[in-house]
Length: 192
Length: 168
Image (cartoon, rainbow over all chains, first blue to last red; front, top):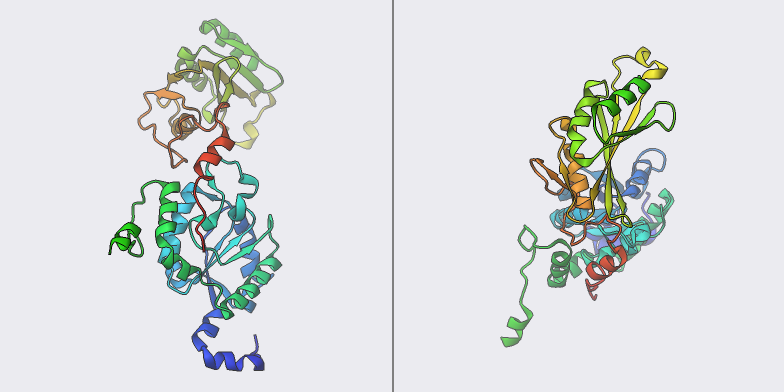
């Protein structure tokens, strides 16, 4: 994309934010049927690189996490581990109706219904399936959110980590990895 | 092949009922305790591919029906003579309360994951199976989830509906 003259002030003000806004590195994490839309999105047909989106090999190099379909309980575990490995700032986009409210798996015994109960979600792309164009609409909306500092899922995750962690434990049972952030006991804090 | 196999099966085993609903298909009803011997016999008669193990929950009759799908491997395409194409369903019924059946890993080794799957989804116990652990599922269910009396909506309401949203 050529640089917009109107954006020069933004670039001067916060160059870091502008830079990572236009270089979203998507974690190539496949879940559910939505991943079938991702290969045409990132390759020549729709070419996500026009929008600065490129898939990366490991979550440690990525800052955009697209959950592309229904999330089974087993996948949720992998999603949480992947999300926690990504460096800040990181953005989560739920893709398709299943991570939003369960979609067609709303009464399934083995899929979680609301993804935002377990990890923070910055953007939602509704549809079953969303078209590749919808991904780009979602990405451009994400730019706006980053500009307005509303895509703050990773900050919310840190702030509300105790609540997220307790929800994760309710869904998955005992988690076999230590907390990402220290969990302060509320009762303990009050006694101080 | 079909007619001779049908006669041989009925003559060799007691309580075996064979029907051939259409060409190339055969349905064999077997009492549950003679499943391993019947499968071994069929394997010796060319049906050497255990394709699938399936289960049906007949809740009104209080039975689980286990269905073993057998076909033959053919070394070459040209070996497919019309009378050799055979698809055999071996059916057996086990009681619904405390269901159990002999494992047939000794006959068909590749049935191991199928038996684990049926065990976790229907709660059928396979005697002699080396590891009846979870195959796909993560959590333990009070009622195995593919049984007809498993109430999915109530389960979802209790399990996932009870998790509170994180307030922003």
